[in-house]
Length: 341
Ligand SMILES: Cc1ncc(COP(=O)(O)O)c(C=O)c1O
Image (cartoon, protein in one colour):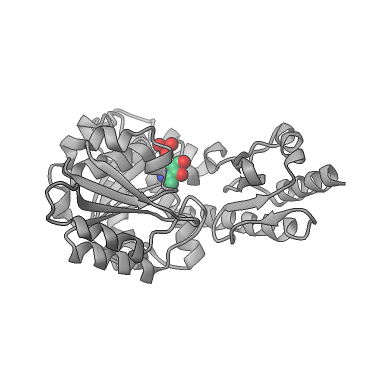
């Protein structure tokens, strides 16, 4: 059996989540979200955010990002993001296609946006020949596995608000970020001033299911139509909602994310001592980036799934997930050592 360090998407479905799907399969229920599972899941979201939020379940992370952005942007506005952003690199141009808006990126090595990089966009404000700044989109944890502090998010939110922009947060790995920073959703999202977030869970044990969460319910007005037009309205929604109920039950989502992060730290700890292997990023969540001798990449990929991040320097990305074991890590590290022997 070939184990995966390629992506947390390669993980199986957590047993409790699978059981929740089976439990939801016992009877007829009204479709499109008018069911008790969806009601319960929405209540849990309010509880976790410590506020009245508007939650809309969707199928994919791309669907969450694109529908949320389409709802809040005008075609003559721009969405600003880091050059590493998933919305820029990995959504096949869907944000531009569906919003009809320009996506502006600024260079980033760790995936974080900095205010100093956003400031120059303000020069365009009021100049009718330039697209107008509309949304700042950040990713938490970033595509490089780094975690914004609450203060950093708050600073970006303040900048967005004072310049008439919205702050969108792509939280495909929000649980990994929360446990890494030892913060609650309320502290990291509600209290920092995020306007809308894509709440990811598929990478953290679900079979399939993400959510768009509006922190200000006023902003959600009309979003149900955008979701439908974005082809993200799920008829048998109870199966997605039931997964979220199980996700939050006894803080399963934090346990799974915490385990994934722990496995990444263990991998980094063991791998950093191997000569000719160099960690290229600090390890804050469940991603380990390392530069390894190019000649061992292919033989290692014959035994394990993982992606080459930057072929020029032999940089690879290894990701752990809730189902990664210590034994997996030990075997993997041994394999790297043997290949370098
Ligand atoms: C940062 C980020 N955002 C969003 C997504 C969601 O992607 P998908 O549409 O494949 O669910 C991913 C998945 O890789 C991601 O890494």
